[in-house]
Length: 282
Image (cartoon, rainbow, N blue to C red; front, top):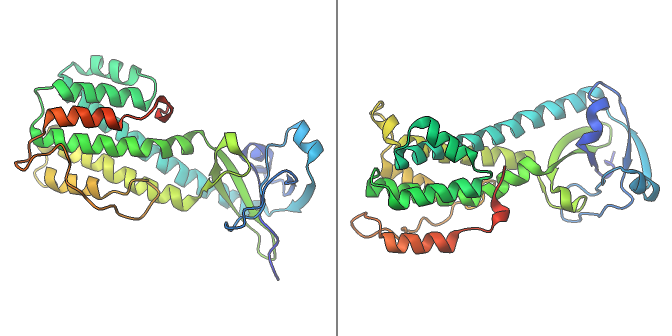
């Protein structure tokens, strides 16, 4: 038996459904048809005006299917968000080292900044003038911070997007959550659970490398990857965290043949790579 088109509706409606109510009313009259995607129909926010415009379709979803979808989404969503938080924590460790400030003061300054973009800029300013880091550490940290800047946009989509339940009706109904951008619902491209899984893996690799190269950990564990190995891992990470492809690992333009950092080129590259304020997340 052929499956009916997939319908989407907002996560906000699920407060009651999570208790086991099996019947749903989905609105899709003003949504678009995504011809190239496996999910065909999209439901927007069900406010009063939208309900007046929309076609209503009633369908039934077994409570255990909804419960499984909710648990699965919560696990992978939480893992991705938690993995990103480890990146920011490890960047703080480097900020503390680069400034030489007492921990309480360094934390108040770094985490007192609103949004990732401001914290990244403070760390960049600190490493530009620090005398506490070696050229090898500086070069690694520059590349790691560059990668974190590339990843923060995805993190913001996950944290601030609209979580939406997708339902496939049929003899064996299925349900799963996706994340869409709130400002462009219902026709925006979505992030699926596979995107969260891949991103969490890449977030973990980045945060692990940031921890491994830090001298505090290296002084306490002699069985760690070398800074050069960690730099290679960071350079091999994809430019988008949910992308499984691997970019060509080019040599850093600010790195000379002897491994030292050309600070003049480094500062110029920093200015060129800075993103507009919209990249910052809270």
